[in-house]
Image (tube, rainbow, N blue to C red):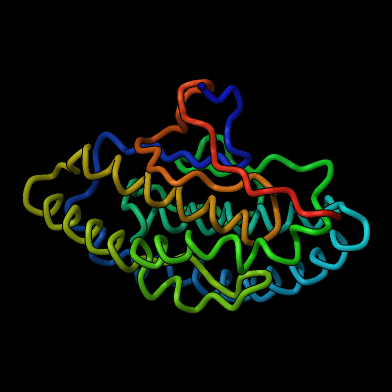
Length: 236
């Protein structure tokens, strides 16, 4: 049976047709202002997520303003990661904003849930998400190791298999001026998996992340992907 709905988090990244051969060697330096801002944004993300935890527990709703802020932090993190060492997909410098920027080649959106399970909020971020943490630890390596639980005191950065493959892509780019497209598609699939887990574990959705690599620049078309595995309902 084919799924007729998309996963609540959508992550896209359009590979630039032409990339600088050597700019990636200094992007760590160019991105320092973003890293500094994101450090404080992720501290705020943690606090907002704790407040959201209790709001969901008592009301079954994620306050919209808090939700939009945390989506903005994920969105900003993805743009910086796409520019730097989570993908190296563009040389266009990321904007300093939590808002969606349609003209930027990397975008992230999370559908706002009108209601959330008050029971699942107690277990999904640690128990139900545990199998995904093991997979994502391979993808993200040390970047995922700083996960602190509720609200995710974690900031996405390169590491693990993603970091290794992006490094390989950078070396190929340096000597050939080209980014291997199959490698890029694979890297995007791993990033997509990581951010889906981040959204689920940070209480933004009750939809359990699928155990699959949706590779490529765009999300799979609606109705073409297998159903995501949904956890058994927990009484509110």
